[in-house]
Image (tube, rainbow, N blue to C red; front, side, top):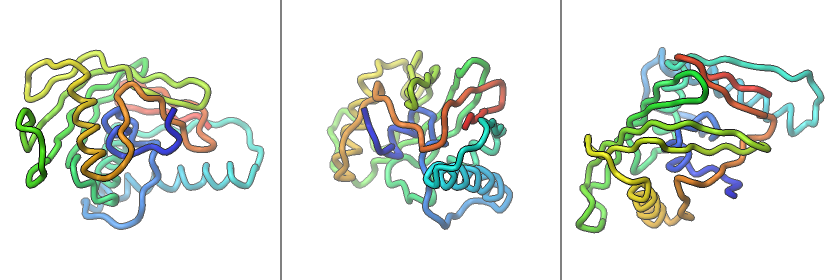
Length: 193
């Protein structure tokens, strides 16, 4: 089980909501405002949790647009060197679809990989005991269906290029302190705290 959520596997799992960003970015002003709504919420929940304040359970909803703005903010704020874009579509019952653009140009990569790749995926995420993971149901690379193992290889290579620990698409990730559960509906993500 991972205790720190690396941005690449977490984003690939469609779980960008779970990483806390640094400040500063180059996204549009409206998208920045959408992203700040989520950042402020996560900061408050984390502060309440660290202060061990007891509050009644709550729920906060974010639109698909706000969620995607937050993802764009994270990519820019973290100066993500490999994943350049992630767009998600949210559906009922924790089903998500997404597109990820990976840029490995200028890096020493195996010849079987292309320097630029677009992944499309469909999956369902699960939460359990303060953890979350994505069960990939379908995965495509540039329009061709591929096994999940290919994504694990990309994650491994990206981790080695970034001198980080490699993860897997099957890993569970801890939710941030104070967050109990996540659920999706069509165009909406609900955070339970």
